[in-house]
Image (cartoon, rainbow, N blue to C red):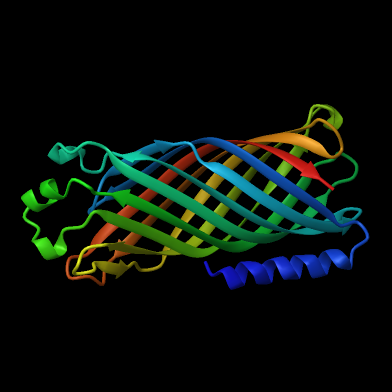
Length: 259
């Protein structure tokens, strides 16, 4: 995802905020635990790591409706077991995600139930280490195709919606659920001399999440959320077609401040 696109989104949000007397900014940061898995015809690799996240939401509105723009980034490192089947130790792993979304919120002022719909852009990058070069060579790869690192990059459009419910009239916070669909593409490449670099066909996947928010005050609070995502990519235009299934689940806790 290009930086210029993200900056454009922030500029649009700032312009909208300047036109609304009820604009609000929410800044959040937190950490969590994530399980990430790649499977299919090409590779089977699993990693459990602890990502950190930062984000900002710019919102505006009055009464029963409003809008928002949200920018979120998360990333973390760990190890993966993709070469365990040939006796190699776990290798290095790195994952990052970034999303820019915008949406509309609808509030029922009688019972406090809120719904939202959103659309946005999402990108992700997975780096898989393969530092046991001798083991890779023993599989029959030539020196020109031996690599020490592979990258699985994804990008696409996401859209969906959700609903949140106040607990005890909002005094005990709120709980919510959301569903999303993504139309994505992926690129798989390595750092070999030959330069393996292939792109998938368009893939459709989805996500489901639940969350709980507790406000300590009108300006400060905490959110816990769980999200599961699943996508399947078909690299059918290569000499040897293959599929890659991507699944990951994340439990995240964040602190936020509003002003």
